[in-house]
Length: 251
Image: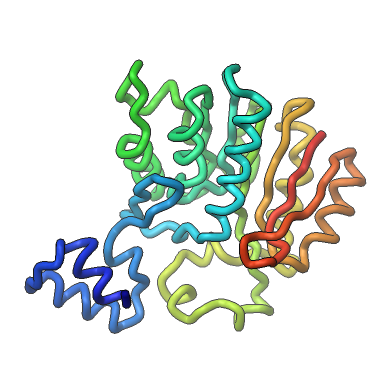
């Protein structure tokens, strides 16, 4: 099913209308389908994109599912404190909340324009018997990596900007045109925010906890070397496409 047909059936229930024709024109002009529809599925969640954050990718969905499985197997009952860092839409933290009833999730995000989107995604996807309010699920923190983050976490899950400006040819034109550059690109050949994330783990990760950081394949060696130098163990895993995509870090 092509994008036009998906738009017709997912947003308009198969009914042709003037509004559909307007949205079809947006697709023709290169706007991503997820923005035109207004949401995207992510681990059994419906992730709304009203503030136009980074669109969640299947590669991210893959490792988040692995993280949830690991958390469930290691800590089936006790309350866990999780940080979704570089949260954007909040898709990672929302999926954790939905699938792990014992989780408390804080969302760290630099752009306050995305805060209402994170709140909406919690409301629409997390239905815990004790409350329909957002919190005590956790809190949303305006933060540049760890600024304003004061506590330690059992788990930190991070999808930082990691594309190098020198490798812009890897990125589709529609992505550059429509998705927030702040969520895509980073200095130091894409490594700058990965570096800050790893360097902050000894301060913000509880002993015995773990972090997962998404990155480019080229970052794996530097990440492991950096982690080793500060007493953090790191190993890199492949995504579902066989690409070195994320590293698991433990104290």
